[in-house]
Image 1 (cartoon, rainbow, N blue to C red):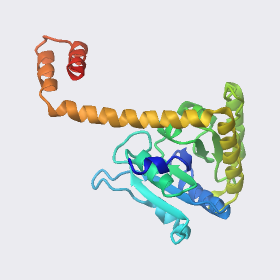
Image 2: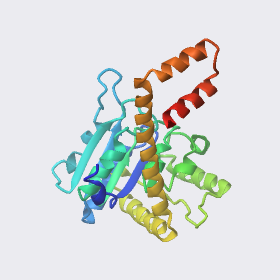
Image 3: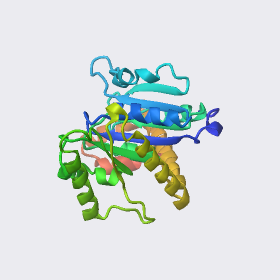
Image 4: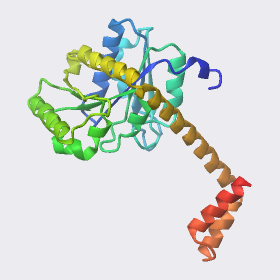
Length: 278
């Protein structure tokens, strides 16, 4: 990581999230093709659910991206979530840094698709795409899931199916109801696609570019990347601290005193923190 640090941070990070079955893998495949037509190097981090038995991932994304398997300008890495909540893998930020340092112009990160708890991708990506599809729930479900706050761009996939116009209309209504916009004026667009045929992918890329230009001009890009680095540093520090605490006897001694009724958990925590400071 120390050697990669000066070379990383140049890639544009695009997050794709949405419920299982909306076509995230197929949409990722279509976006890869669209970016390659523009001559850009693309990295893909596809986080798959982990097997509770082997701990490995299904690697379903590689099955759906066979056409890019021999392309030197595309690198696809499937990662197991290994029980990590939020739709991502613990190692995703580190893998992102590796791909950026390796010269990728764009890195697409596809989440597991954990339904109504996919907020971690918003803190990791420069631009977050939220995918929906007909038959996957109405606008009320979209609002309940909290995706109105996560999305920078909405993509209604499988737009050739009945109900796609209804999904787009529900989204427009929910956006107007909440007046979803940032302080600097970004209004979330809604793009309809048929990812299995590659239809709409170029329009999605154009909206991503528009959002990127807005981020740069408003100063939000630097803010997002600073917050992303802060979250990563905090996670590493907390993990190190947790391991350090569990290797000594101080935690167990305090826990025994809590069980005996000599201390309450809050006082024990304060004492533990004070002991670490000294």
